[in-house]
Length: 256
Ligand SMILES: Nc1ncnc2c1ncn2[C@@H]1O[C@H](COP(=O)(O)OP(=O)(O)OP(=O)(O)O)[C@@H](O)[C@H]1O
Ligand SMILES: [Mg+2]
Image (cartoon, rainbow, N blue to C red; front, side, top):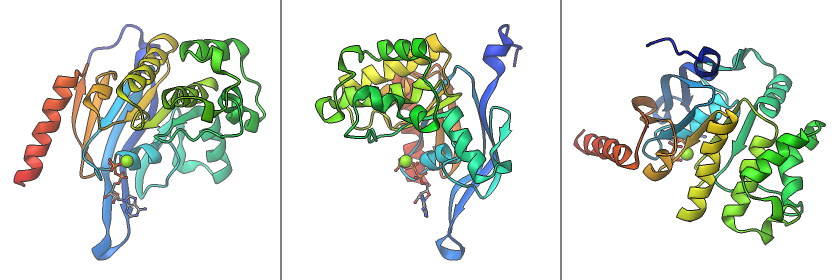
C-alpha cells in the first residue's frame, strides 16, 4: 500500500469490523452467519456487498450499523467501539452518525416528502442545516415534489425521498440493504446515480448490499461474501467483471 496524498480524506476509516462473528442458535441448529469478518469502509468510498442468499450480507451490515448484536469481534464507527456503548448511547450514535436506506422505503404515509426527509432530525430535536437540505433535495431531484405524500409518488421517487432522508443529517456513513431491489431499472439507475454523486461530490460514505451486478458497478469496490466470510474483493468494478466473479463462485458452490 502506498500512502495516499490526500491522506485525511482517503485513509480515514468511517467504519470497521474486526474478526466479527455472528452465530445464531446452538448445537445442531447453529448457524454461523458471520465467520471472523474483518473489513474497513473508508470515508468517501462507495462499497457494494454481494454474495448468495444467506451468505451474511444483511447480518454484516446490521452488525456494523449497530442494528444487531454480534457474538464476538469488534465494530468501530469512526473512533467509537460499538461494544463499549450502552443502549442509549448506541441509539444516539445510530441517530447521529448513521443513515439507512431499506428495500421497502419505510416512509410514513401521512407525512409529506419533506416531512419524511427531516423526520429523523425532528425526532432528535435537531434543526436541519437549510443549505445542506437544499443541496440534498436538489441532488435527488425532489424540489417540486416536497409536499406530496408517499402514495402520490412513484416507487423511484419514494426511494429518492429515502435517500434524501438518509443524507439529510450528514451521517458519517449510509447503509443500504438492496436499496434498489424494488425499483425498475431506470428508477434504480437514478437512485444509484444519486448515491454515487453523494460519495463523489459530498464525500459521503456508502455501503450497499445488492444482488445486481449493474448496481454494484456504481460502487468503488465490491466485497463478496460466501458462508459468512469475505471471499473476494474487486476495485473499480464493472457489471461484467462482477458477473464474472459471481459465476466463479456459483461454479465453486456447485462442485463442492
Ligand atoms: N434470526 C435468525 N435466526 C437464525 N438464523 C438467522 C437469523 N437471521 C439470519 N439467519 C441466518 O444467517 C445467515 C445469513 O443471513 P443474512 O440475512 O445475513 O443473509 P443475506 O446474505 O442477507 O441473504 P439474502 O440475500 O437472502 O438477503 C442465513 O443462513 C440465515 O438463515
Ligand atoms: Mg439480506
